[in-house]
Image 1 (tube, rainbow, N blue to C red):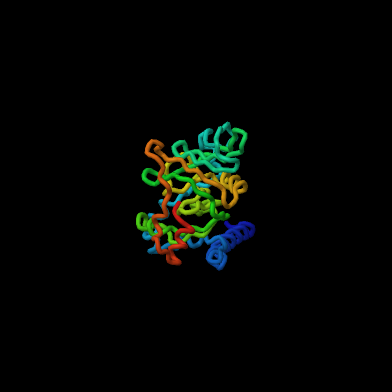
Image 2 (tube, rainbow, N blue to C red):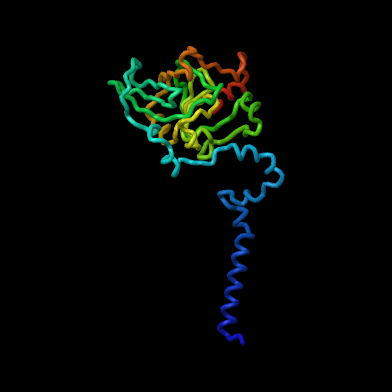
Length: 248
């Protein structure tokens, strides 16, 4: 036999359940400022973008940098060199970037470098800098990987990471990454990847015009100066945009 108290309790439970359902079926869900509702409304586009979603890195620096070998952590080391203080030296085969401090010392950072067939060498300079850079893949890269987005706004999900330092006369840059486990590996299309925390540190030390020395992957084969292969000799406005954003 139901008492007045039990009936009242059941009524309150049903009311609470209905209120919860109504909460998720009303404008709150559709107006979600983080856009979570869109995750359940891919429809036919899911099949189109599935390859890109699988390729884009899913890691962030949070909680993952501890998995990186100790040798790749930022550190001040002995580094005898004839290069002037403030020079960047990229030791491609060892996956290190050195920022020369002078006095036989340098800051050493672990980096990711170009995969087989995409490494290069030469002496260049930083031509510009950007915080949380946008990314527009050039035509050459889209031909190899047509599933890539045509434009990606800067932010934590962008493969260029927190900072970018553009290397003059090339489509390459030194930049951060949202895939920290790629540090110490040959993974990129020619750009130099750094942990976000490291690229922020280097960015604060580097000026436009800073000399960049990139060592070859195979020293015995001699230098291979970077060429801007994705941009024709006669550049259109679109080509200049491609050069500005480049590969990663």
